[in-house]
Length: 162
Image 1 (cartoon, rainbow, N blue to C red):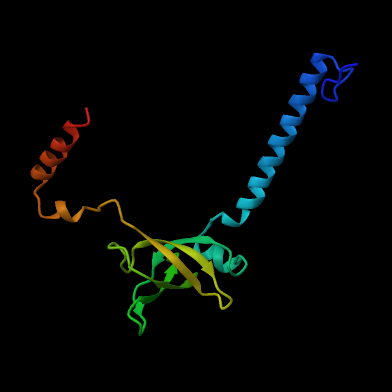
Image 2 (spheres, one colour; image 1 turned 135 degrees about the horizontal axis):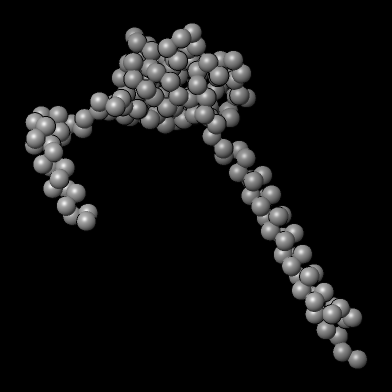
């Protein structure tokens, strides 16, 4: 009497069906585990009015986007920490603290996206800042060039891409 791995009496068609079913269950299980494991890594994007209206739990990783309020940038005593306010140009204002090197384009009345979390006091503790430029942005290298020189430089750099 031969034993074919505990599937005695199953036809090959049924064996394949059992294997496919097990593989499908394993795939669904792995997907659920991955989603459950990554749930704390999700970064939700908030505008200042949304953050003020319904703040997430303290410590939850989020992104805050808005404008840097005029007159709000303050350098703390340590020389590294910056405090400023992100606003939506209306009523909502969110205080932000950031320690690190500021992006070159970070100035008052400019767009900013801060990555971090709210602390227990309601202050947004930013770990990373992304400064946004407007549609009139010109790189420093091109600021002193005439329009003709800039167009010629752009043409020269794109010739190698063809």
